[in-house]
Image (cartoon, rainbow, N blue to C red; front, side, top):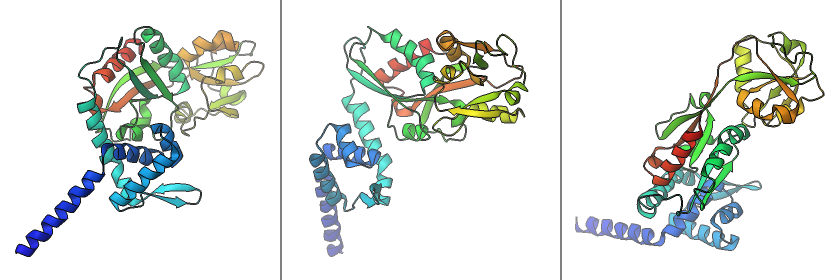
Length: 317
């Protein structure tokens, strides 16, 4: 019995010694390595040299008794242990950041803060630009870092890797949002758009026109086009001739052609004069475009994050 107690105590001492080796700086490096799966990119994120990041990785491997990142061809891949560490490490760092390091209040006129947002170029025009106009001069030390949307947007929120992801609500319908909070921020509708000298300019857009005239389709990097899905459900056939990955560039592709496209009205209205296009009213019904801002629920009480959400909601919808 005495021997078992001694052995248990030795194990506990070993765990305690390992915990002492795993300081907060190493956890920050581990978090960056788990996110980027690349030593160079992790070093850039942390503003460290690559040798320093490699040294930290070696210490982590020794302390955790796991390689963490292993070569797969030219790339590095997370081990099973590393995959299992992603959320616990993020939880620990987020708790320290938000409950210990973060100040209990936020003063936009004096406090320094960087917010990371993931949003499309369309959202940038109809929401982020008005947001920047609203906070211009009010938050001198505020920095907004806007990233491009991806299929992993909600995964990034679930892991608390970014402050906000703004995306169509239909893309989140099948995603478990237990750890997320959200608020509607954009409501729009799709309208037809053609060159100002197009035969259909100034006339309603009949359903058959999309099969009669060449159609310009939106093909986002995520691979899912909401409007194409809506057209398919409505039984409307399109004569596909061209695709674009950016909603903002689509109006500028129409001039001098017989192309027809469908784009959100708020964007089309802003760009019509510059792109030399005319908006045409669809002669068929499509569901509205709705976008929500999503964030991790642990940020609900963060004063700075709450202030940013208030500014977004002030210019939303």
